[in-house]
Amino acid sequence: MQLVQNPKEYDVIVMPNLYGDILSDLAAGLVGGLGLAPGANLGDEIALFEATHGSAPKYAGTNKINPMAMMLSGVMMLHHLGETYAANMLEGAIAETIREGRAVTYDMKAERNDPSAVGTSQVTDAIVARLEKARTPTTI
Image (cartoon, rainbow, N blue to C red):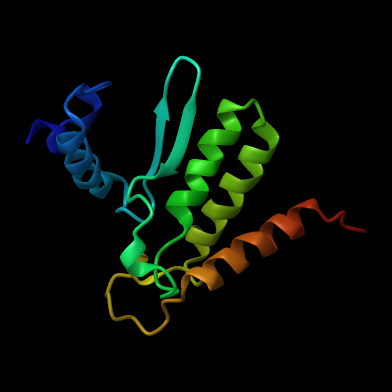
């Protein structure tokens, strides 16, 4: 209960993997859901970055799942590798796509059955287009 009511009280929670997996999925709701929750496992010599929801194999090929959690995991990885510019560019493109609200999957809509929700590939295309536009020099 306290994790939901006062999440800032917790920096680290140590528990067995099974409970950690359950708790991380539940806590993802605090930041918008599994479709937005990036994940990182950091060791002394190795780091692994993944969406909190894992690979979600039952949704493979459905073009339904929000790719932003995986992309935000990539942002964390880029920061970890010292690639701050690339991380900021990707994070900015994701944030702008969310802010605009058009190219988002069903989990980010007020109503789950909103017909304006798009698929995985359309979200990805929108973010890639923003990245390409950001790196293209403009002329005055």
